[in-house]
Image (cartoon, rainbow, N blue to C red; front, side):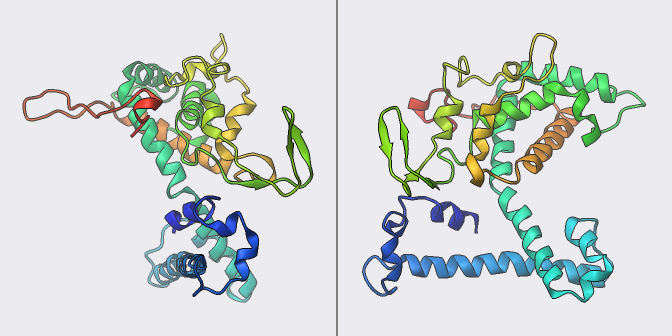
Length: 291
């Protein structure tokens, strides 16, 4: 499903995205193959909504369900008699899961890569975590919670740097202008398709020194407090169609990163001779950054 969404939002994969009149041609005509794709994507979307929900209902009935958004919502008395409410639960739960199943996971994978490559960042993060949670070998040690966010600015800075360093949607989702505009002398007619280059914005050396380096400190001031950087929001899109799940994504990344660093030390795997295995990371976009 996520692959179908990624293909569907690209303005270059289907001509109908560029020439809307093509939506009137039949599916059997040359250029009408997008309708077969759309039909399959619709079936995948319906499966995403229905299948996990049915699994949840079955688990509630046999007493094996765990606490979740869906289970908590279904526990309300109105849920059993209001079909609209049931449909809302299905679609909201599917959206929460589907929206994060590739984007948030992708950023987390990139963050793990960055932490492996930058042990200094791990050490600074662990010092901050030890001061709040206690050392992992001490009797009072505990895992982090969301209530600790205000006391862990360096972990928050890692979250921001991870979303800046690697974007799952490098060009964002295409937008359409609602009125005529002008940018640097270029006329932009109403209804034009605008594609925001989030990658270029967040790797602009004029704003982020050494942009291909993973440096969480760029989001902290001299006192170690977070800096309000409005540009980092470009990783989640812009305008009225910016990602509504940004807060959820950032909270999810925070708790995952904090929990991993509180529990583990990340490093390179070893081969049979005990030597580090090269992970083949490229630091230059010319060499294929993060490929």
